[in-house]
Image (cartoon, rainbow, N blue to C red; front, side, top):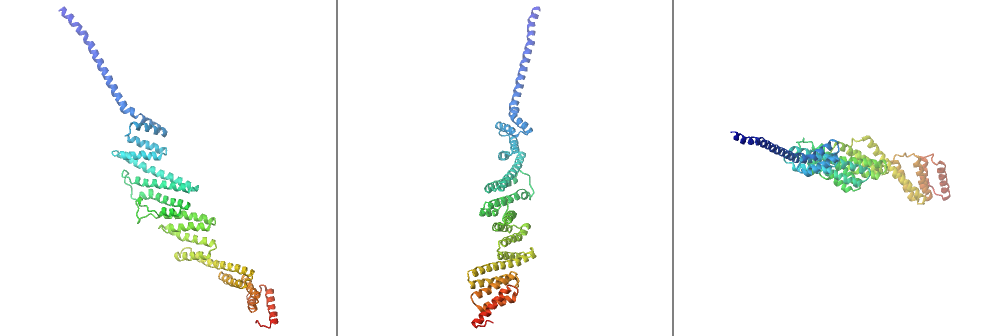
Length: 436
């Protein structure tokens, strides 16, 4: 019995150690497994997104340049993370890096077939990006025009047009919620019409007139319009710019240049059906007539004013009627002045027959211009006519002319006229001829 007891005792001493060893192994295995799981989680979840967290942190402090770099590093590890690409695009937009933003958003739009919300956001951002980019090019073109850099302005307006074309496509994307039927007109098409007018104007300033006409007349079928509903507003916008240009030349008294600009404006006003353009047509025609008036071409002014009165009888009727009358008088006065000048020249050259012809024309035109028959001006011309006869020794006609002068203008050169008539009496006495 005692022997047996001694044999059992060692076995009982080994049991606690075995148990301890097993517990130690289990604990070690647990630690290893936990570490493995932690490591797995770290390397599969936490570690790959460390750059993403950095990007978000930089974005929170408005440090978008560093945020962009962190997003790029994240995407180099996780190229399929469309949400991160969307955030990178937003960071690009904050930095006004439109081209990069649009490229990234386009990737999201194309790859995110199963990400409806991401695609919707991307599409809307593309739309707003093209809108902003178009605005930038438009401002660049405007600045170039102000600096008279016409070719640079043309290039910028063409870039703006390209952006508006892409904006039109984006605004009709099926990923965007359904818009009302009139969405496109106020938000895109009006900007397109302004662009066409501005580009045509830039070509006009660059004296590329054919290209200007081609640009403003180019159909906008790519923007969803047809020949029947062609938005003619662009013609009115272009015409107004040309008319302003004409007014500036008018103020500078550059009548020919003003007329050229007014003529271009008139052509385009006629293509627009808006009330504003219709009202501008008679006004512009009047402006053109006045350029001729100011150049002294009264007959052309009268012709245009008469046509204006016929086509628009209600437009400034009293003023137009008065100006037609004045143009008529001024035209005859102009002719009279020329005839009088030519008559004096012929007189100085002793071509008395030709001088007399011009003097008679001058009297006729001066009377039609409104000069009274009893005026001193006509008296002086009649005196000159009488003298031409005297110088040609045409005594009967000389006597007749001096007597007419004395009758119509009794006080004009009275002494000289009487002297000529007395000399005629002496001539009759010596020649024996009767010139009564």
